[in-house]
Image (cartoon, rainbow, N blue to C red; front, side, top):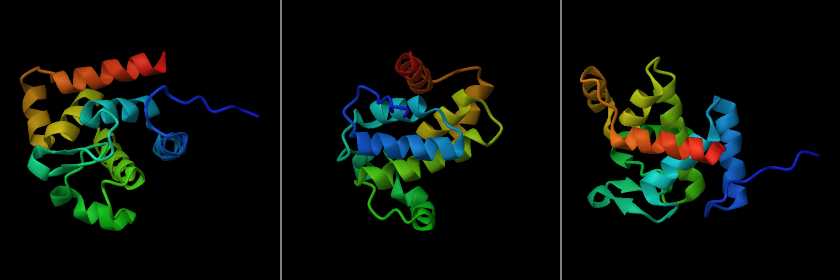
Length: 140
């Protein structure tokens, strides 16, 4: 029997199990998702940001992702399970774009045009750097 190793973060084991399952299906390092959650919401599922536009753990904006939510059956972005399902799906799409990890994280944070602009300027955002460094710390 293999014992699951959970991250020492304020997320339930049930939610971490769900994140691990979704990440395994999409070949994403779970520490990356945990690091995004830390940076976006400090692990608070009820977080509302960007003047009410961004919701939940991974700060999803329904105005940009309503079709994705419908496709995935995610109805409530303040529900942590629905939120990580949508957030991981967004991240998976960005990581599969053929661009760098840094680009994917900057696109997650500010959109594709923002990420391309920074990459073309030779800049990696503080957001991307923080998420990557946090994920490396979590893996250790």
